[in-house]
Length: 276
Image (cartoon, rainbow, N blue to C red; front, side):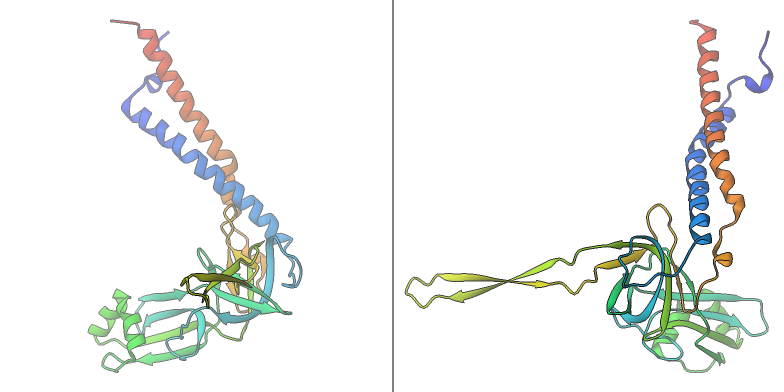
């Protein structure tokens, strides 16, 4: 019996099979991550930095900086900001963002927050309307220059509304992410002391001191890839990821299996043709 037409190997079929196999693993990984993350978010409770923390946590503390950064409108020191740029009377809206690692402290304990892949939820800290010919500070002008839509709006004479959302120094900050403990490294300082003899030799004296690096760090976690920085208490219901993405747990392996079955079928079909 002849095989149905769609079962005959073809270049298009092999391409689709390869794509199915390649897409299966990422879909499964994303679905599994969504399941884990939603389960953790639903049972999330705030912890204290003073506790020995490890794993997925929700903590809060007072913001301090590791490097100088100032918000573009209020001019206050901050750990990061988002500047929303909207053309008044137009549907155009874009944003410029600058975020840096920072620290939070509470009850004598400090944690370093690594902001890679972080989600920021900040309230407005300043708003300003600027006309097309209004002179701006160098900092603000450089930020707007990084937003092509803002440059175009200013050239057309449109009035801009700038909205700043910054995480200011000294504010209480909530962080939801993956915490891990680390040991402060000992820093060894070597000092050369000249001998008082006539051989011109030196004596090396070592002095050990503790590093200022905090023992607790919070990041997105390799397997969860989730980090939230907020200036107000987060709502777990709003943080939940769409349940539709959990379908990848089933869809991913199914696609990979179908792709591999197509490859196996192709191999059997070619073998059945025999040598010519």
